[in-house]
Image (cartoon, rainbow, N blue to C red):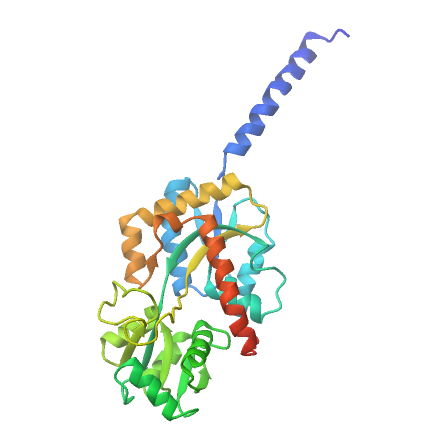
Length: 328
């Protein structure tokens, strides 16, 4: 078949361009702004993590990285939005221990906290601190446990709500120590801490970001950090291993996830941008100033995040379910 020269050139040009365009498209990520969903309110610790990282990631990726706060239902609304997003790497979520472990045990969700996501990277870890009001008679952790045993159901522990880290960690504390106390559930860690300072409640297993300023001001007592080693931000507070409660480790770690089915090359690109950000001295200083610890470089990977999430679900779901914790 003989084609007119103009038509032949048109077909030839099309055949040559299509593969190039396809290759260029595959290599172009990111070609438009990326949204990081922070599933909690602006100004909180999860939002702060996201914004500190986003600022550096936009330099590495060459695109705007926007943080969008999508709040409600202990973070499950924002996380659910990402689970149901197009898996193209343009909508990702910064999540924490409670959003990607606890919520799967206490909420009826429209997504699975493991199978509906692609892990990107582990970011930060934040152990807890066991604190009490300053008028408690106990001055160390062994003394606190002895006092609680001598006064069953008389003390009150503050939490940031049913199923919050403070609640779940305190239940484990009761199980391990054989103590019993009541719970006072608040709308957040800050109001609970305010009542601890004023003496309205007796103790908390608190996040360090909220508790440390009050400890430093001598408004509350600090009994132990729930980690294997002392924190750089609070070197004077002993670990649970040092003060008679070995192995009582708890922390609110954070990671980044994309929707299930996001291409591996995209995941690798995002992970590289996060790793680059976490290596930056300014980013590290800002995160550590919040009382957050940065995971070692070899743990800032999709595989490490997946492994930690799996292990934490195996550890915490039986504790949560045995305690009968349900979302309110």
